[in-house]
Length: 210
Image 1 (cartoon, rainbow, N blue to C red):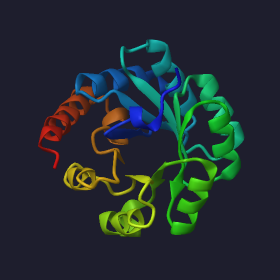
Image 2: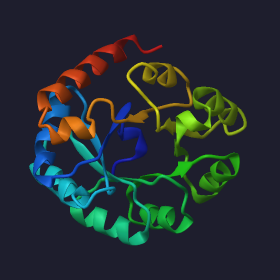
Image 3: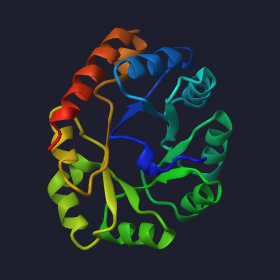
């Protein structure tokens, strides 16, 4: 059965990877740290190969998705690689429609009230609020959540271990998106133990979530 956005979170690591051969170790390190999701972005040429490598591992309970999906072609190639959810930085009606038709969870980016209304019209109830830090962060989410009370917001951009719990404390925020536990430098340097350690530090704090 296809996953939904509700199945992804409360933290979605954003993985920017330069070598697909490291993807399996990244996923295992996240899982060892208690995080069973990864949004592998298409910002690099290794993105699709990394998604396929993680999908082929079949780590129990682990879900891999594609990020920075900008076109229908990106979507089709991501699904072929094994992506189970789709994330885009902006709102594209055709992309959202195609993802929903394919039965895959989609998290489109929004920055304005107008885009939220478009998402609602398209049948999407959870959106990516991006770039969160540049758009006012949690106060802006709270302002948008007041009129759009059935819409949920996943902040991305400037989310850190320090402010993630504050975001998650708001009823309209089911998950946060960030890369502090799996930075590009940690991946390229092979610091998989560091990925596990930082992930464990955060997941242990989730028990103190407001």
